[in-house]
Length: 208
Image 1 (tube, rainbow, N blue to C red):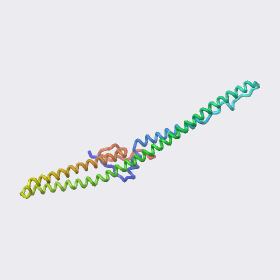
Image 2 (cartoon, rainbow, N blue to C red):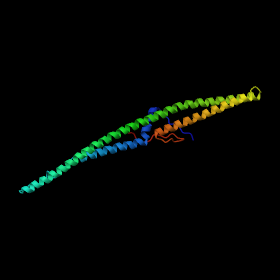
Image 3 (cartoon, one colour):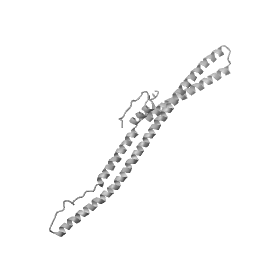
Image 4 (cartoon, one colour):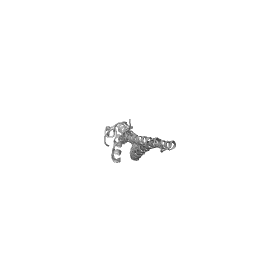
């Protein structure tokens, strides 16, 4: 079954691809995950000042100093963990920007794929029309040549040349058909439709 070429102008086809290509959904999820990791790193950075506000007073100086010493150790540990979290936060933020850049690159790649496939299909269609017309013309010439042979007005060698021309035109027509079919399939692949045969799949997915 012949592959039905997708309909639409380049802008509509590009939008259709951006709504359907599974790689974009995967890249969007990667960006969201990187953002979540960045938020988690920020939350870990905020130090918890544990024990400072709940120190008990006592007439025993050693006990008071003991509480403050324990609180200082807790605060120091939390600050240390907090600054380590800041480093993780910076790293996660870099990951977010990297994922965004990868997504932008993927968008550009998909746009180029769609436009390239659309351009090839646009060139393949008139080439097929010309090849079909030339093949029909060659067949008509063959019929005329056979009639002339029957009338004794054309020799076998001349008829053989016409037959060869017909075969060449038919081969060119078949090649043009293959080119048009491949171009249609490539455009479907660029749209994320996997080269669906015999039907024009509608748009899927949700807008970003």
